[in-house]
Image (tube, rainbow, N blue to C red; front, side):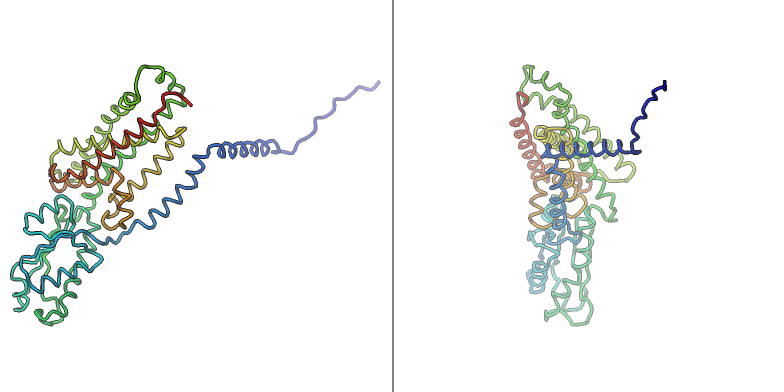
Length: 386
């Protein structure tokens, strides 16, 4: 009687199970992505919106820079220079100053980036061929904005006086330009970058910390405990925000201290004023981050919203590119971002020695943004889980 031999198991092609499982996992991820429509929409829309926004908004050649003009004499030459400044794309005459003290205030407050002074006796000296001086003051806290415009100013004025009979036709400039680069005479880029980094780093860290706060509670299952407690939405929000205010304050102090110690960035203004306005800026970003956490359904969406919000802050706030050189519509977008105001505040306090009266507009704008963000966050906070 012959013994029954065990039948051999059917042989499978090597790797067939690997590819089948991989394909099943791939299909599962596509289905999950389809269900998470918010994340899918952000994946598609964020690059498209940012490409269109930044492609049209960013301009490394600044235009329409706000300029003040101080006419120490009423003459045809002075009016010709003023008309030339108004007709150029580099400068936009926004103020006709009455005194040098007013010019100083306009530059210190950041309302203008340039000041052109035509001294008394300028036309008379031109007629005599005495090479009078045209006085130019530039806010060099942003050397990118001031550098190219300063180079174009001399040619601009000379062209404006070509057809003026008071100017001798010698083929050379009949005047000299005496320029004064204020607040950053050496044109050091670290004087411009380090104050901006204070706000950029605070925006990044504060926003991400709080954007994940509520979604983290929901995903961990601890939100039920909060909802069961006799506590209001505003109390929950303040309880989550206040610890990070202290963390942000420590971060700001470290960055400013390193900037002063290593990069020799001056601190000409009040440290107390900078600390107070930094606290306001930190609270504003925490409020916005908390708003994101109440909108997002999970931590991935909260992170995507933070990144979407962070890039406009960096590129449209005046940190990397001159704010005055952007199109008007891009400046409107920048005006809705707290970093725009904080960059001005830090540069003004550290480099210009600005006081509270010079910064009241920027401080009020940040406070308004904080109140709007807090109102939206508290309104959206749900007392019950969906």
